[in-house]
Amino acid sequence: MAKEKAYKVLAQQQGISNKKAKELIDRGLVYVGDKKVKIARAEISDQTTFRIEYPEEIEIIYEDENIVAVNKPAQIDSYDIQDAIEGAELLHRLDRDTSGVLLLGRNEAFIQKAINEFKNRRVEKEYVAWVEGVVCEEMEIDEPIFTIKKGKAFSMIDPVRGKKAHTVVIPEEVQGKKSKVHMRITTGRTHQIRVHLADAGHPIVGDEQYGSRTQSKRILLHSAKIKLLDYTFEAKEPKDIARYK
Image (cartoon, rainbow, N blue to C red):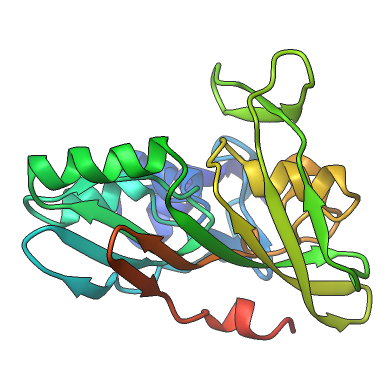
């Protein structure tokens, strides 16, 4: 059985360019069975059968002359959504793996006003996640976060260099050794919820970067609700968040 680079085998099977095949693997959309293909240049059998899981369609929750609220699917970059919605600019970002409410502004005056609200921590954000371990009591986490942004961003708790970060964690349900939790945050540090939960001994399911040992198609984190100025938006939970299999 011959060996070949994963992206080349995928390109051949799908009748697409090598560049496109590599991009699909890098975006985390390619699977063999239930396992995600992580390295485009990995040597594999040229008989390997791949499966591509494209993200769901982008659902617009609400729009007017100031704002567009989107229920972002997992595995789509926030900037891809900005590119897809003409005349709109991101007001904040969600990690590629995170689903849920994402906000874009439509005009300069509103964008500046909204950015000011984010800066002054007047935006209320609520998230839902499945985490490792049993969480049965509310937690308030006030650990400062420092982020290294060379290459792939990585954050850590750092009392000296870190910036203030505040997360409230409320338990919702337990299934086996996994818990569904609800989070409220006012600060928006890079990977804040992921780092705070990992530090508390409850990394988010699928978040291998911060210590989860459970394989999942994505990090099980969802932006459920955002309150900004006079607006409140909620995004329906996708199947993988609504119920842990």
